[in-house]
Image (cartoon, rainbow, N blue to C red):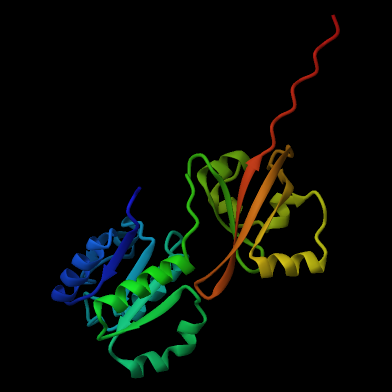
Length: 246
């Protein structure tokens, strides 16, 4: 089984070494970054399933603060859904930002100082509560929409199937691409939002007008202060061509 990847950003080398050793012992794969001239692309390249971020990075001309990193993470396409565990010993700073943090349900706070047991329990609980949906970009058909039903992301396989580039996709709402076989009622929509899951038949509309039958499995994920809808699509089998009469 592949180890869960965790990325740690902290400017204290001793803390990075200690936490990296702890997490490795618990079976995680850890990428430890100092935050010193660390780019958002470098963070994304570690492909984390959880980000542990020190909010009180020193800042300065070559180093962003933890808060600045947090904003960049939530604006990056491949990081916006990643659960974040913020660490700080400055309770006053946390209180000042409590509204900002509360708006993102995929952020949890691990106040410093903490015991190794507290860290391990918090990490396991946060990963369990906000485990990221995974897919094979080249094979699985996945569409991601925001709370306003605008399409914001898709797997490469979905883009090929729909005949769209990612830029073109982002000009459309879900209803432009996906037609339900049966219209939802208000109660069905409420039930989906409550259960955070829905499965049923849909029809995909290609840009060339071709309609493609599929089954969609939609789930709700809260991150980056909004609600995201992630749909995995399975294409309906193509019916066999009729056999011509002898």
